[in-house]
Length: 108
Image (tube, rainbow, N blue to C red; front, side, top):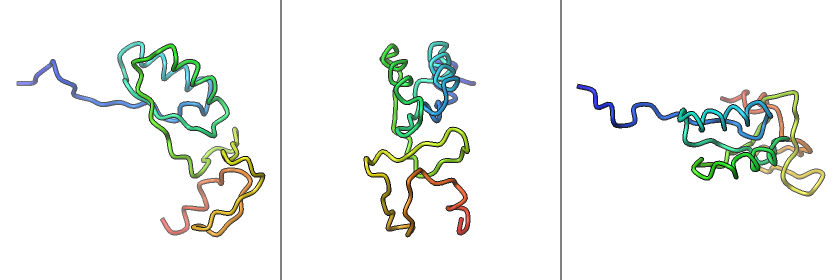
């Protein structure tokens, strides 16, 4: 017999901060009990909006979304580093923006 009192499905909001519509969708899903946590992308263009929305929902659990690539052509986001260019030793390339996903696909 199924115990209907426990949690049977765990959901998580992804890419908070990337798009305004995504930010609002995550907040709405939280308010309606669909999810309890979300990942937030620090270099994303709507980060500050996401933070302000999340402040109004103290029960929403936020985790950092590791952002090594940018799968989107629009919007593009830059690194968190204040330098205009920096060198990523482990992949041997200088970047001024977070790179598209295609640079990882060669060996994966």
